[in-house]
Length: 206
Image 1 (cartoon, rainbow, N blue to C red):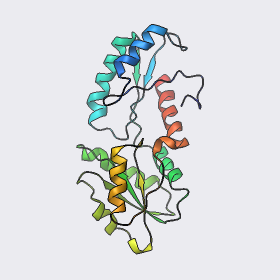
Image 2: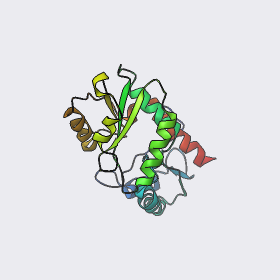
Image 3: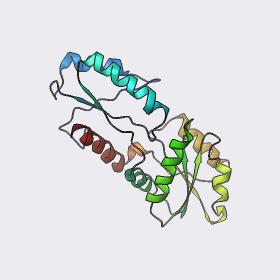
């Protein structure tokens, strides 16, 4: 984002598991004033669905950020559903020749949010390939997804994850156990995700 939009002062903060925290980033904004002066801060949830984190954790983080920074916080929509998520997955699949794909998602306790994302991806992904969808929880089992495809004709898995980590590793292992190769990369590697993030910032600022 910083490379694509040098006019923005871009900061990353994490809800948990990894520094810097939202409070730490807020304190830094308060200390330095930042290149953008003292104007509003766009808080973009780097999450794919409108599930628990977006409904509960992100509003709480926005409050912490406002208190720590002394700035107005403009919280944007989650990243999904959006057509640019389909474009990002297609970027990850460009180097693959398989015409059948298992799109692997993390899953959520809010199954309706996952279903909303899956239906949007079904509509937005280019029809040159055939797609099935799986989640790491038991909502959309991999075995069910594979029954929708002809495994003998070749299938590739692709991760609908923002970043590398244990969840993507688990997806790769489950596919490998069934002899299914996995596309390299994650959504954060794609130009489409950068464009989507910047779209969210532009919407907040307008």
